[in-house]
Image (cartoon, rainbow, N blue to C red; front, top):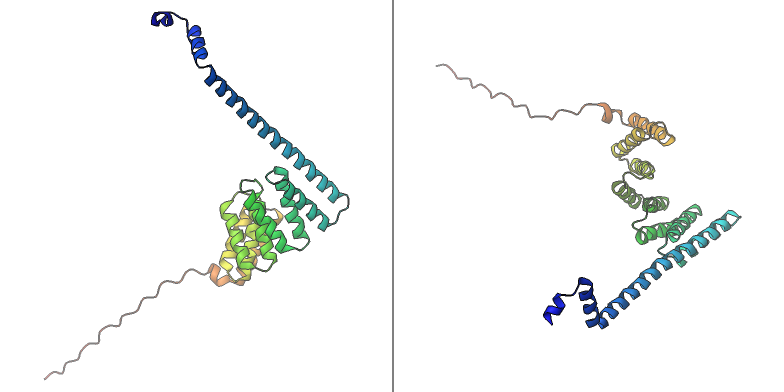
Length: 242
């Protein structure tokens, strides 16, 4: 028997193994088919979700552009975001809703939605814009300390984002209002250098000059040398000659 098996070709040996393990092979093939169907359905369903969400967002935008008021636009975008969570269109709808609420002057509600976006879509390329929205909403709510922390977090975490110059300018204004003039001037100078002759760069340059005029002594005078105590000479003792 062993000689017969040894004399079989590779194909014949494989077929013999298949015949001996037919049941196990059938189970394995069935599992692979089921897994393939699951993966295919997931990809298809994700595509369907994205298509459906995109259509819903397009309808909301069309309704807004056709004359819907700001309140209606915020509500329409929130409905899309709620109905299609986890989709790219749902993310854009949530950000649009937060922006619409801000333009309505509903800063607290806008801040909540901007914050929700940063939580629900941490990997979104629009996350820095949502962080800027959070900080700006806090600033509009007259919460300068919280707004300053939010602006600084954005600047530190996303230094290369397009919203960072505006965040730096807003943070500099907060520092200026708190009489932290050196910190404010440093930010204005950074903006003026990076933005050049743009409108924001020119405005930052003007603010630098204003601060220099407010504190010329602090900005131009050299640092005072440290004071050391002057030791007086020991008094000479006079001796009376006999």
